[in-house]
Amino acid sequence: MVQRKAYDITWGPYRLVFGKRTLIMGVLNVTPDSFSDGGLFFRRDQAVARGEALAAEGADVLDVGGESTRPFSEPVSAAEEKERILPVIRELVKRVKIPISVDTCKAEVAAAALDAGAAMVNDVSALRFDPEMGRTVARFSVPLILMHMQGTPRDMQVHPHYDRLLPEIRDFLAERIRAAQEAGIAFGHLLVDPGIGFGKTFEHNLTLLKRLDFFRDLDRPLVLGTSRKAFIGKITGRDPLDRDRGTAATLAVGAWQGAHMVRVHNVQAAKEVLAVTDAIREASDE
Image (cartoon, rainbow, N blue to C red):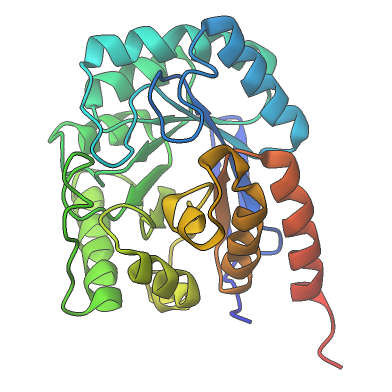
């Protein structure tokens, strides 16, 4: 078992305490084409109801996205992305007490979402796709998740290659932490995600899960996103909507190996799996 360092991020009316308990980020895709639940919550009323349900099931954060980042996906315009998510965020802010994260690579979308009441940014490009994103996050003084991705969603799964998988990802994240700080974002507001499924082979994903401890020296809360991903389907033979049992195994391993927060579609199942895993983590050694 990997010991987890404790972190406390407090901003505005919100507080996230990492370490003793594995936190849960509930996924809310307001898209027609996400790999797992695309189209299921595309209507505004469906998305708002789903967000409320995720919060009621025990999510610590809601992650709202309006652009699919599945492999080979095509980008959408900032205008379309805003049209999808802003009404949902405005309504959810009135109905849930947990922080809402906006999952976007575009500074224009992030700024509009934060103005609408979102309180965090989850940028799968780690500030690389939009030069204004860092300054935007700094201006709002909110937490930011920096994720590793080799390439772009359109091409990231075309022959992913690393000479040294773990050091390359760690060095990338360290460099992006520096870039975020140079943009004016507080070190204490940063979280990191090794980007399982984003420019990784099947074997890369398994190695990352097994060696999450490798990223401890970045000294930031570690976010893990494995929910319903293709590598689970390759092992189990299940379609995306039927991968929650396989996902559960990755959550237990991830928490055991030091993940501070997991990003999932099925919050209720994750909460039970993590409650048991965390109880074992906290048990006496004798």
